[in-house]
Image (cartoon, rainbow, N blue to C red):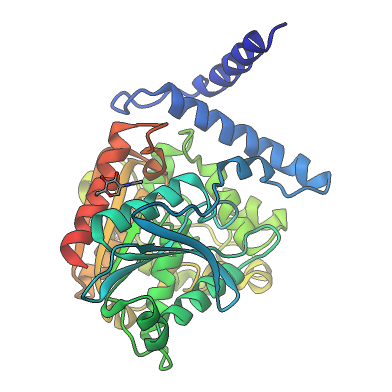
Length: 398
Ligand SMILES: *[C@@H]1O[C@H](CO)[C@@H](O)[C@H](O)[C@H]1NC(C)=O
Ligand SMILES: *[C@@H]1O[C@H](CO)[C@@H](O)[C@H](O)[C@H]1NC(C)=O
């Protein structure tokens, strides 16, 4: 068989595998999107096997990485901030004034992803081009090799390193114009580090704005309407999200199983559900016909062994109002076809109730990870629209 027909066969198998899940009608049809989804699903299935054989479980995704390449407009370098690897994008053109800066945190379920992934590298360049900003794209150690709070602490350490007069001066950054942003698990980390900064007396430079793109914000209730409605969509299934969440805290399957049953929160922590009670916090149009069920309580030893999921640094929705009220102007982007949609919506309600100014953008034909499909190779129009919305908001508010 020639290599051409082999490729065709492979593409056919991949497609058949992915088409197995029908997509909602108003999602822009794209074979490339389907193929990517199939590739990600195959990688998810292969992960345990690769791990068993002694490889990194998400080895195949390394193909997405690109080296730091400068061009006529931007200098791109990989460096360390406080020992944390970051990719830095600095505009080449001389500026007579200080620049704004975006500290960006990539997504990938705390398990995959890198500032070197082509879509994130691309986003970094777009932020430079559109905002004339200095962009720091932070890495952090990943699960399952590293669990919470390593991911949080890595990002926080890199951010703290950056938020110092000396470092900002070195990069020509205006300390009054800094944004912390991230998507998905990166949105989780962005929300968490921004909360943490509020009570860190050692950091005096304040973040001006935050942008959270379809963030994950709570690990207590896996039965929100968005989890129910989008459980089987290929972009991010409920089961994949539960795997990501549980692996963030432990490789012990017991937590994963308890989360699948939504029975992981112990009775003595049941008061925490008031912070994410969707029957009162979600706008009516997202509740639709869904009936709120008080969750069934899990064994207390689970939370004793893996207290991370009850920790506000992992579940920013668990913050008290008194903490939230200090947060800066916030941009939250949610997608209709996303298990994490309601995490974002709940945070918007909580932030507004605490008096924080929030700009909400809801993408009706959007799905999880849509930001990553805007490159000239993927060329998904809906994705370009989302990237442009994000850039526009930054341009106007940073
Ligand atoms: C550099 O910037 C100019 C002016 O905005 C643009 O036309 C050009 O395409 C950019 N080069 C690259 C490599 O992006
Ligand atoms: C959530 O809100 C509903 C309706 O107001 C209420 O019946 C329920 O007890 C609340 N549950 C929790 C855990 O706060």
